Image (cartoon, rainbow, N blue to C red):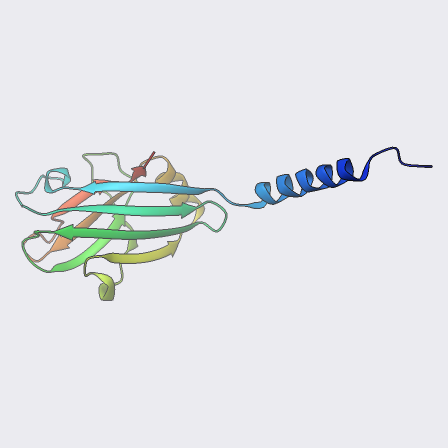
Length: 148
């Protein structure tokens, strides 16, 4: 049987199919953000502290990667964590602690999440908070949400 397809048509079709296959093989990366404020702590704190958490979540590898910056806290940071599941205004247990060696601003880290953690994070049920000696239960906090 003789092919009636022109070579450039076959090449274009092959390239299109290859691009579609490679695009579908890539995982989605979800950008996340939290505005860290003392008024978001439960109960609210009085502090000049403030900060931002920028994070990405890779849906294929389940890897959460973050950078948190902060300023004007009452003292040195003693701990920082992702907590959940909890809506705004409620407290919850630690899900991912930040390594004590990585507490200086900018605070960077990564963690691989389990399926339940992924579900809670993607539902907006996680928050990030930073603790100081003067505010041992947390000085600034923010709900982790998609950063459209």
